[in-house]
Image (tube, rainbow over all chains, first blue to last red; front, side, top):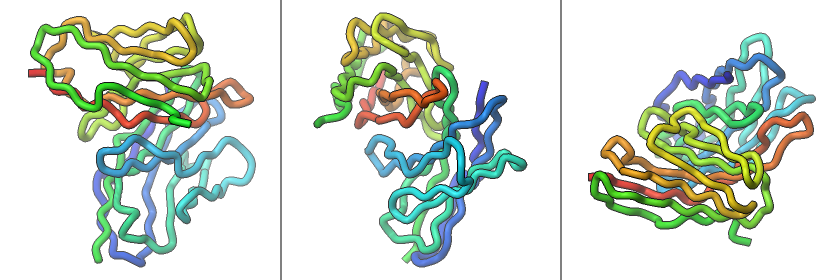
Length: 111
Length: 116
């Protein structure tokens, strides 16, 4: 079965600084990879997804992620963080019957 | 278009009581899912349904049951609630990729359940 690890439970960055959230996956076949964001009290919203092709994918809100098969990673990046980016971020890998989520990384943005 | 609706928004329940969480989607997705979200554990799949009339067990199915009588509705039932079922419950739906894997999931707003 597929699995996802997000090594960082909590990250704090200053507004305007760059951001990288780490994600490592385990999956036997070609992975379908996703990043979701969850604001407090809300459901999850898709930021971006990777199925195949270009390993650098662009998403909403200025986010991007890079798929690196050799490292089994799918890290999320943003060049300049805004205060509204403060939220919980989840990496996920899609399988045949379900989607496995990482435990999440909580992002705090300092003024 | 509402997407996915869940009811109730929140509920406080006495242990031993029966409870059904409701989930309805209007996107005509074949697949639907129930997750629970607990601090530090992310989202864990309880049950899923690939199409109306079929269901399957996820990662943490014990104490929960589901049914899928039609495409739109996917209720989750706790037959006899216990305090460890205190959690936030999310319903989701999705289509499939061309390769048959689970595609982007669309989530409802969640139900916050407290079992005392």
